Length: 134
Image (cartoon, rainbow, N blue to C red; front, side, top):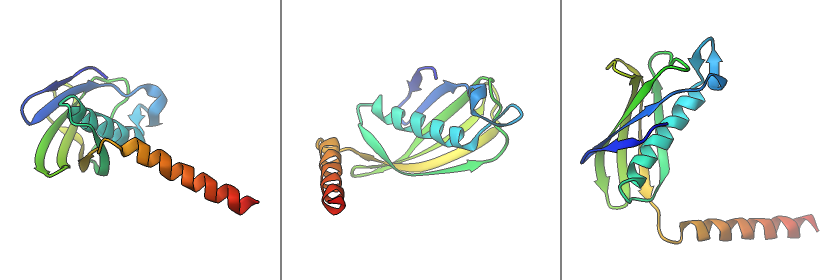
C-alpha cells in the first residue's frame, strides 16, 4: 500500500492485491478486500492523530477485484458522535470511477488504557482456565 493522502474529511490510498490473495483466476479474495478496507479506513483516522479501533465494518462486493492491478480506495468521514467515527469507502481500479466494492463502518477512539484492559482481561481468562484445568 502506498501512502494515504488526506483532505479535511476524506482520504485516498493506492493499493494492489498480491496474487497470493486470489480466490479465483486473477480475482482477489473477499477477505482481502474487507481487510484492506479495514486497514485503510482505520489508518486514515490514525494519520489524523485519532487512535481508533474498528467497531463495525460492512463490505459490499459489487464486481470482481483484480489481483496485481493498481487500485484506489477513497475514504470519507461521514459523521462523528463523541468517540465514534462513521466512515465509508469505495474501491476502484486506479483511474476508473466504477466501484468494485464499498464499505462503511464505525471506528471508536481508543481510551488510553485500551491495551492494558485487554491484557488484564486475557490474564483473568488464563487464570480461570488454568484453575479449571487443575
